[in-house]
Image (cartoon, rainbow, N blue to C red):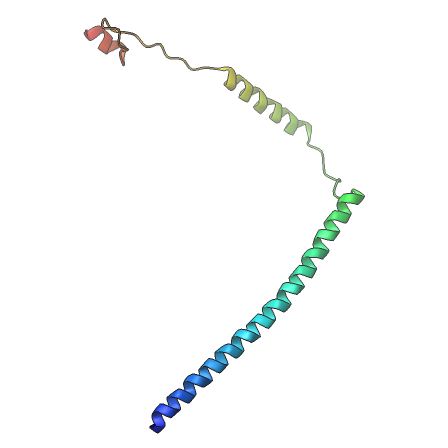
Length: 108
């Protein structure tokens, strides 16, 4: 073989070895990061559950009277809108079919 081909083959093999080494290094660091993330997530979930059990998250400010009045107004408007039916009266022509407008009814 020529020396250039041997050099290219050696560089290709070196590139392959380097790529495998980098892939293994990345995998090791990803595994370590996932373990750290699992530990931190477990601690966060545990602290939230502990706060819930102790009642630490129940210190919310109640809504003020203006917020309550606005909520009642919105509820009343929604209930009124649900009971309202927008009906339109359609006229029939001499042939018994519905007419689209009053003008078309009078044209016949």
